Image (cartoon, rainbow, N blue to C red; front, top):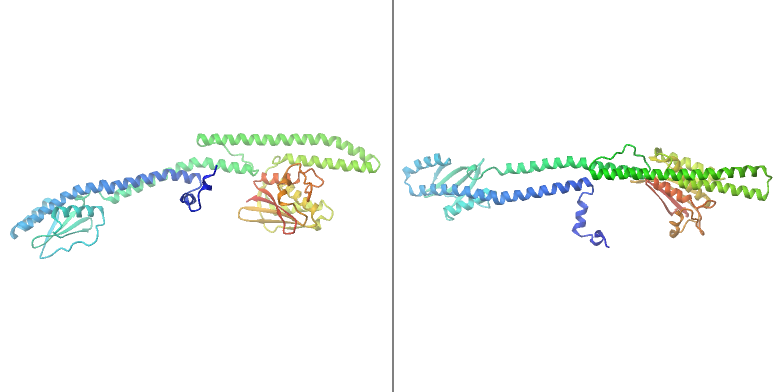
Length: 452
C-alpha cells in the first residue's frame, strides 16, 4: 500500500500544513483542545455582532428614529415662539441634548459608517425621515450626535449611546478573550501533567536503549500510561535476565572448557619441543582465543554500567593496547584526538570494540589512523587503514556472526568471525552504530558513531 506522504506532492497543502503543526504530543493535544474553543468563540462572536447585536440595535434605533422624526415635525410645523419651549420640553422628556442652529445646511456624511451601531442607525433614520432630508451622524465621547435639516436651519441632537445599544461591544470581546485565555491556561496545566509521564517513559526507554540504567523510573500517570510503563519495566527485566543468563551460561561453558585446556597446556609444557607439540600448543592457544571471543560476543550489553568517560583518553588507551599487542604496531598507528568529549559509556566494552577495529586494521594494512571527531548530533571514532578494503556489496556480510569472508579482505583472520559482530553489538548497545566506508588512505574506514 502506498503511504499517504508518498502520494502527496511537495506542493500539496496538507504537506505544508504538517510542517507548521506541532510535532510533540503536548503541542498536538493543546491544539486539539484550543482550536475548538477558538472556533466556537469566533462563531459566537460573529453571531452576536452580525445577528443578535444588529437586530437588537435595529429595534432600539427605531425608537430613536421615531423621536427624531417627531422633533423634525415639531420644528417644521410650529411657530417660532413655541419652538424653543417645545425643544426644552422634548429635551427633558427624551433626555436628549437638543440645540437649534438657524440658517445652516447639513452636508451629508462622506464614506461608510464604521460600526454596526452606526450602520443600523443610519439605515433606520434614513427610512424614517426620508432620503431627501440631509442628516449626518457622529460621535462625541460616548454619545452619538445627529445633525438634521429642518425648515429654517439645522437641529443638533446628542443621544446617549445606551439608548441605541444594550451594552458596549468591547466588554463582550474582553469577556470572550479572557475566558479563552483562562480555558487555555487550565488546559496547559492539565495537559502538562498528563504528558509528563509519557515524556519520562520515552527518556527511560532511550536511556535503556543506549545502555544507561534507569533505577528511579516508576509507573505513574493515566491508566494507559501506567500500563505502558509497567510493560516497559517487565520488558527491561526480561532483557536483563536474558542477558545475564546468556552471560552466565557462556561463562560456565568457557570455564568448564578451559579446565581441560589448562591440563593439556601443563602436559604440553612438560613434553619436549617438537613439531607435533608446537602444533598442539598453537591449537590450544587458538581454542582459548575462540572461547574468549564467544564469551565477549555472548556478554554483549551485560556486566558493566555506563559511566561518564573522556572519549579522547579512552581512545588513547585502546590505541596503545592494540598497537602494543603486535610487534612494531606502535610505529604503524597514529592517533588524532584533540577534542575533549565526555559521554556516559561502558568503558571496557567500548574499549574492546575499538581494539577489535584497530587490530583488524593492523592485520590488513601497513598504516592505521585513529581519529576522534564531533558534529551536531554524534561523536565519531574513525579507524582508517591502507589495506585492500571490502567491496560495498560485501560490507554488511562482514558483520554476520561466525561468518568469515572467503575472498578479498578477511577482517577475522585468526578468529572465528566475531570481531566486527562484537564491535557493532557494542556500538548499538550505546545507542549508536558501526558503519564501514572507503578510507581516504585507500583501504577501509570503520566509524563508531555515538549520539551526543
